[in-house]
Image (cartoon, rainbow, N blue to C red):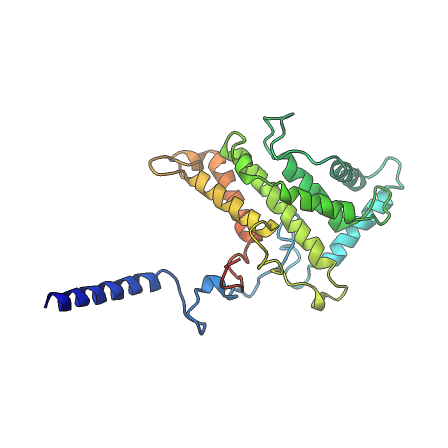
Length: 281
């Protein structure tokens, strides 16, 4: 009798556990009951403007059908070459020359010992400068540039990216500002890769081409950084964070931190569409 009671209790417990686990996520829509987080199943509104770049370029003014990335980049290139001939030089040329000169500097530290009070990680800014140079692809005279050094610079920046070090820069706002710079750098770099993967737009790499890359990939480092920023912004058990502090939303600090998380959500919108079900990468 006791053995029968024990079996019944075990069965009830197993059923309850199964219902609880099953209710944690929607596993419908696929044959193997895999959570939708690991299935390419995006929400697609009719007026979506999907695909990199999500930052820097204002695609919304053009509309989903009218924005043409190639024409936008070509126009920037044209302005740089034209304004190089002007006396005095034009502002677009001056801005790009500055970005190029910063990209050509040696790799800085994530948190610069020369400027410990910097509000944005020097390494994040350097990565962003290099990503923009890759996208435009010109030297300061408006001529085509050898991009291999800038590809290596961006790769080195990702290798040395230390979001935990950034989170210790001083406060959540410094972390948020640095996070936004990192996210923009990643967005520009992916735009460069996709744009240059084929001259035929229909044959280019998909926007989520890096979805199955490893934990140390740029994509997954950005995801981890966003998670760390969220944790820091929300605080821990028994403590307030910058975002959820009773007066945090009244100041710009909480809004900046929340906005950085929002930017990460937009640029990393394909997080969770991995097709490697075993590792979830």
